[in-house]
Length: 419
Ligand code: ZN
Ligand code: ZN
Image (cartoon, rainbow, N blue to C red; front, side, top):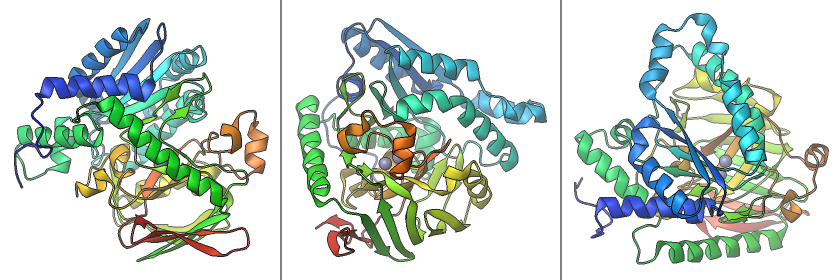
């Protein structure tokens, strides 16, 4: 292991941080002049939060409102709050966020959470707190999932996260290495980050175009411990890279992003699948997941670690046992090539093909799902749930075929790479 910058960039840290903030505001959000911005972030990411705030005002933001979360405060709650407290969530806050998005505010989330913050806590309390939060957050999540406004997520290195990714390094070096990985994956180290992002988006759009032209009825994943057929929703469309939100703004919802994805049919998933990377879910690490689907529903599930939390997640609601997303990412993507396990969905989901339990994105339908009611979406196979959890099923050992409506297989990926 080396302590030197992996990117070999000569740029000073402050400039790279500023470039990441600019990419978040100009590419991630494409923030409009006069638009409000609601920013959520962990306390430990304050330097990036301040750089983003500056870039947002330079882009003409009318008001940036930041909501900070603090790991120590979360742990204090688990240590000292009464048992009855764990069904409480800040509904007033999420209602306010939903109101902001409905009336035109953009949304940016900075992620940098400690992947195992709640590992030592009572799984029952963790599950109750998650459920209360998911329920209260639902109105805001729906607006985000339906792209009612332009939104994005970007990551920042924090000591707790960096320690998890680089357990053998002193903290300062671990944080520096994680920042290097973030800057590199977020494409801020080139001569012109904004132009690099335009080229990357064009590549993702070309990939989507090819998949849309095939009009596959299903995808079949085959690899060690995996033989899974994922039926695709009727009138599904592949999404990826920059897309236009319903307020007419072209935005990149994830920085970085390497995936093309679409909506599975919630009743047409069959077979078994084994996860290829651990899943970090709200402070719990769930590893070695194996599940079996019948007619779209998970009927058997196990996990090597975090099985308790997984079982509770699956019982969140009826939709939690069904799929809301299927995504293809080459095993050789820039993030995957780093060889790191990030314990962070934004990064790990862009290193491997994945499926998501729970809520579907209404955007991945013909015409961007414009004008489709909840009933229209449901009739075409879109799933509904309080949760949306991505987990990784792709690797260099997994092949993917597209199945035509007649059931004829067409090779899509071999050994994790595009055919
Ligand atoms: Zn995804
Ligand atoms: Zn997802």
